[in-house]
Length: 455
Ligand code: UD1
Ligand code: MG
Image 1 (cartoon, helix red, strand yellow):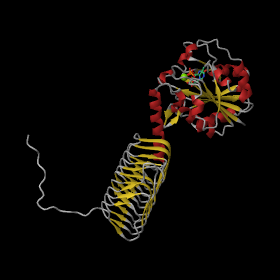
Image 2 (image 1 turned 90 degrees about the horizontal axis):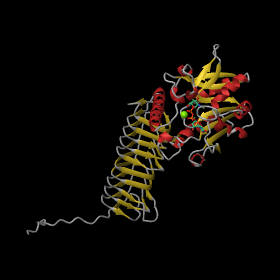
Image 3 (image 1 turned 180 degrees about the vertical axis):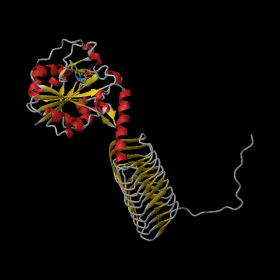
Image 4 (image 1 turned 30 degrees about the vertical axis):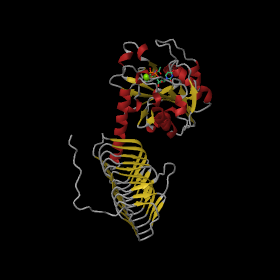
């Protein structure tokens, strides 16, 4: 059976107090509605249709990289009116209604709802039991427990307000029946809106059974209406990720102090200390340890490598048995092979560094190919930029660069060469030779330091 998903995302979100449409606010660095779209695609939906309104085409534009058909709901006349905007695009199959501001709904919950909705003459409704149901539509059941209707808070009787089973807003129905019910909606209620929830009563009178699936994790159905709710769901989401890492065997010094804003793939015996942020796609091999306060983005780190505190890594690949940091910055397109050491206050950019090489202190290595067993002394700079263009520095194997040297690119240092400390190298250094460019030291006996002039 074909599955169509309609995502309601036309609301303004006044309580966010922001000029950005609500569904574009980010949770784990991804907009709320993108979470929902990703989940919709995980259900193998034939069509994903987004209903937008407030903020003009900001929403479709922000999500143009995703496979969604966007339809504008010019006026927000209610949830029923919103779903009806998609009717003409859907010819057959099931229609699942999701909310662009309910980001943490899971694939497994939705699959359970879809399963019950597949039965002939049945529609599925996702409900929840709440200690405080205030504000939600209530599920009204008859004496035999079958669902009769949904009544909105503002339209509910005193007795109906005591019902603690609520409508999550998420439902799944057969497309032709749904289109017919949406056609018959009226707005004679306390809010003057076309309520999607009114289709329940119509289904019942058409002899369609309304089957419910009740969520056990309440965070799955929580919507974002304010920055407080956004912050709370962010923490819940992060805690869920932390728990899943713990289940995979990762040691987390504090599950409340890790942020994963993307996907984190881990090997065995990984240890992560506090306050590290993972962004984009990050892969950590076996026995990798990440110390406190690191930011690691779109990078892979191979087995047994240690990342020391306060290090930043981006778009890079780090080999096995390396040690990075503390206070190291590895910028995009850096590839470090195995047993490489990058120490404190070292910046690496677009550099290939082969096995066993070391850049231990206070250096900048950019646009560089470095061989194996190289030692770069403290304060070495590859001068890669001439003010207009970037140039390559090529360093062979077994090279020793003395401290505080400048390698002015383009330049080549041959295998086994030695650069004396404090040298400015502008010409190729042949293999195995010593290059020195500093001026000769002079000593002046009896030198008197200047003294201050008296007034
Ligand atoms: C709705 C349900 C209620 C349920 C609650 C769960 C109805 C009538 N009520 O109430 O039973 O308990 O959700 O949160 O459906 N939207 C549009 N276009 C519109 C109207 C709404 O896109 O014309 C979007 C909103 O942006 C929002 C969602 O639909 O994301 C829900 O709309 P809202 O008006 O907040 O419905 P509730 O009053 O919360
Ligand atoms: Mg709401």
